[in-house]
Image 1 (cartoon, rainbow, N blue to C red):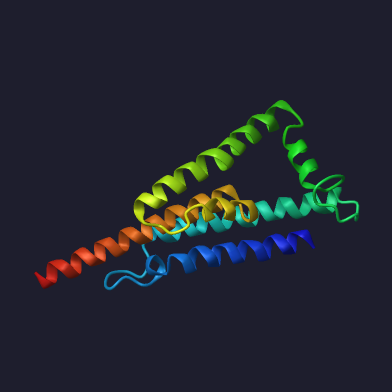
Image 2 (image 1 turned 90 degrees about the vertical axis):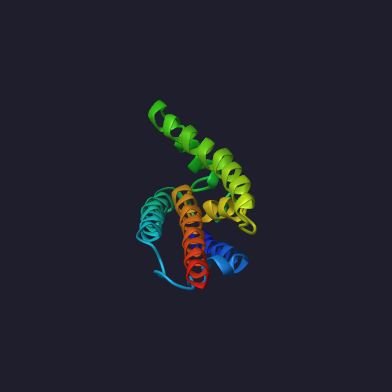
Length: 162
């Protein structure tokens, strides 16, 4: 059930990002509807979610005890985080991921997003809580690429008018 709730929350946050930035996600006036780079970002992000969910489902099936408590006990967030620091190799990867996801992703997307005129850029971090760090990062980069397509399209329209 908690996995289903996560999936629904992920879709809602993604929809909120798109709805908040509808001008960015509309089709450019001319040129391609999407760039190859934008498609690549989306493919990487989706692959990250699929792989992450594969392992998350395995974790829940292996560790959950049926109590339904997602905060403490077997199969909970606490156990998931604790297992990420179970040995030095896992701890090395987990601390890197934690710093990247909890500090650098929101810091960069919020500052850069507001500079670029992206509305509610903090939602990219929120999306990482329900999708993956790599998805949120790829989604942000795809959004920036989408803005570039609009800017390029506007320049082309302006050049043809002038």
